[in-house]
Image 1 (tube, one colour):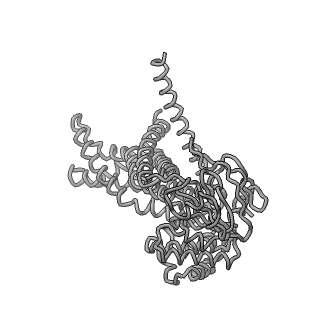
Image 2 (cartoon, rainbow over the protein chains, first blue to last red):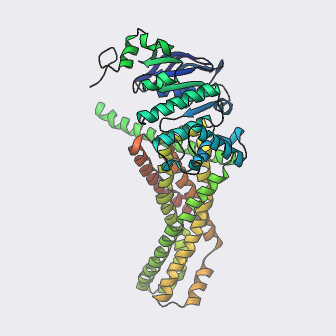
Image 3 (cartoon, rainbow over the protein chains, first blue to last red):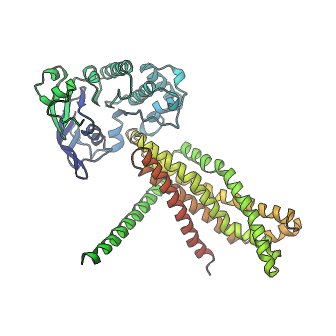
Length: 248
Length: 261
């Protein structure tokens, strides 16, 4: 279980997170929605320790994440980055097997390659992609490789940062379905940040809306359409009229 | 009162900013060394860095050295004629290349070629979240990106300097024997006999120091890059400027240390 209590983060005078309280239960798929620049990525980076919150605590299974042993902590996570964040200098299979080629999870090269090819198959890519370099792949294929890398070491917790950004609607649907299938299949805890409502409906068990540095609303995805919260209603409908200020 | 304190405040702010920068760079350099000596090690990254910094720099180092050695021979001959000292061309080319021009020119070429490429690569990795990805994959960016490059540059640049010294002397030799009328045997004898071991050692030590500076500056500015294409461009430009200035400053300090007495 991931638990955030009164998390604050500011950049100079700009308060991005202003007292976030959120619980993500084990095996649950939580989707954080919110407009651009509302701090969704910052929240995710604070959980991973890529950024340090100014105030508040983040715990994983009751342990304060700022006090745990970093390698063991990070070994429990997989992450799909918004732009893929694939390493340009490495072929696809070495990107996927990056964690399996070094560190505490290191395996022999041949075994790591086999696992990488199996994970590539799992995300719908053929083995001939394994020896290509990321620059030779389309955006959709890069996302799939990023997804394969995120699940390569079979993590307990997977984070997805804007998984469908920059993809056409059909490819977005394919990636959403893949994420849902994989999360269910692995029994992993998942946290996705997005403002793509089609992703939310496919991926989420629970939804939390981040606005004004706080969790504005949280609940099961089935309750989202009838939440009664004007912020959520405006966000779902994509209307310019409502409590969320729309700059035109 | 305000007119008096305002310039002082500006001077104070600039001084503090500069000292903070020096401190950050020194800490970064210290951390780089710590990551070089502590496991885990990444031999594949190290070998790639050796190839990129050493092998692929050979053409530019060779061409720079041969033309500089050749021009130096012509300058010494023409200048030496004014006081009938044109016979010292082999000795001065040798000492000039080995003590000064070889290390400095190779250092500056490495700053232009390697520092810029390291800074641009790491800055791009930062902008595209590849550095964050490394962290989430339980890999320390300093250990994976900085340590292999700094170690490779520190070990390989002295070799490049040695090669640059030899090619530079050869450039002087070609001009001396083909254009200025020196005999081959005496030219080589004068070159060889005049050089001392301390000249060669100082040249190689300068090479190691310049390699270290070039790689640290590339990594430091890459890691601290701002966002977007502009951030990458600024990091690249600043890294080359800083490396070039620090190499010239270090050259002065090392020359003072080796030859001032």
